[in-house]
Image (cartoon, rainbow, N blue to C red; front, side):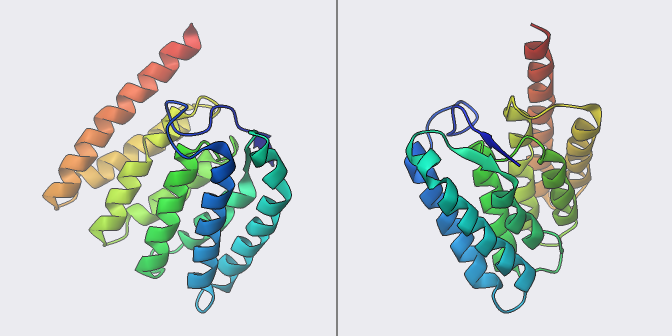
Length: 196
């Protein structure tokens, strides 16, 4: 599934890379993931290579200023995050790329539930850095007006914040507290905007 993205570049609609550079950023992320996954995660490597081929087919649209959100761009990164025991380097790379795709609004509107699912898996990761990246990513799921907000999605996002709020690490505890405030505020803003 693919959809044309309007106003790519982040939650405010501007600021990140120019539209024609987006395809280069995504391709670089996919190539790096494919390289790192070549030995231990062949399914991730194959998914990344398929996504690169799909991206190349869509480059004319990116160059014309009409970037396309495709589930195929996200799939390799979600696959990499599917296992709490995945190598730390691959997890950080995949979570950073998911974060970047959300900021650039290049995640297909049908995919937020899948993103939350892998964030739930990684919230159980014992590495504090992984948990922090999960917390940084959660608010972005509420920033894209093309994502349909429903009670289940919001409940999962809030539950993740609360799970990490109860962590023994003071850094995670305080970051989760701030993220929870931000998530609640964003959810209310979205509901208010949709009512107008």
